[in-house]
Image (cartoon, rainbow, N blue to C red):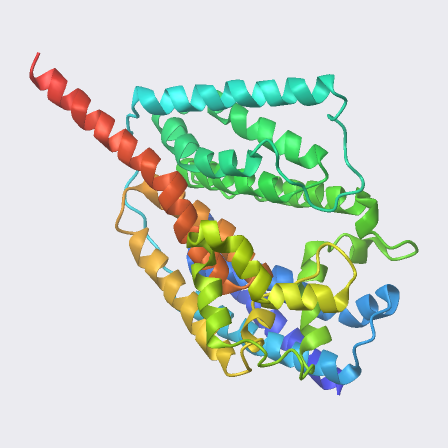
Length: 404
């Protein structure tokens, strides 16, 4: 049984790898702004990779799911991988509007400067109180300095500012956030910063920067390995280094045959998941009355930080047929961005795809509907004010220049 599913998995994996390499060859850096390509590589990382090593993961980490669970998880992974590979190939052509220089308002520069000063203060404060060291016991952070909020805000600011000036010092606030987050033993906020930085450099300079990508992946993997609570002794390094890829996939074989989990969700839970991001004053009350897929699986597994849900688990919580709804929705959203980024100025394409990349990754890890609604909320709160401020300031300046 497992031999058959492994054969299917290897064949679909080989096909998806061929599609990936082919797209990299013909489109180069433009792939990094193609939502269907991003969907494919994220699914490869979070599902294909751990699925290949799932028997070894089960053995070394002492999981109790059966061969039958592995079989169905592998088959489902193979089917979705085939779909994403075929669609990525279908929508392989992408063309952005020609690059043009832009000007940004002084207001944006002032906001950037204030963020930099604040981050310098945070760094100094953490140093003086003895908190500026690498945390090897990471269990999630409260983000008391609001680094994640600043990371979301810096996406449009950094893109606009860098493309207008081409000066590397624009990324000083971003680098400080990366250092502070990695020293916490975290990687989440660092990724929020690294993704837009990478897209900006790659698209503007028309280079893929593959060595840099690999270096960052290795760096983030090393951070995961040295977080002692996430490492099992006497386990091969390559299994420990999978980190969140392994943790994301594991709930699938664990719950794929669990009748108490499958179909447990109802319409009220689903609608609450979609609207959760926008109901800020009611979030605590909703969390007390509704059990979301990630909450249920984390409590049932009971092995601490890192194990919750994923895009497939979030679907079958409402029944197996809901997988079609989820995949259809994520493909529809991807198509919307695919069309939009080819119509707007390039700097907007980079900004939009930075947010999309960040929340597509979270959708693969935790579920689509909550994270896509969260993306809409974050873009409204953090992106739109900056874009409106920049456009409004330029209009005022143009009006004043005309009336001098």
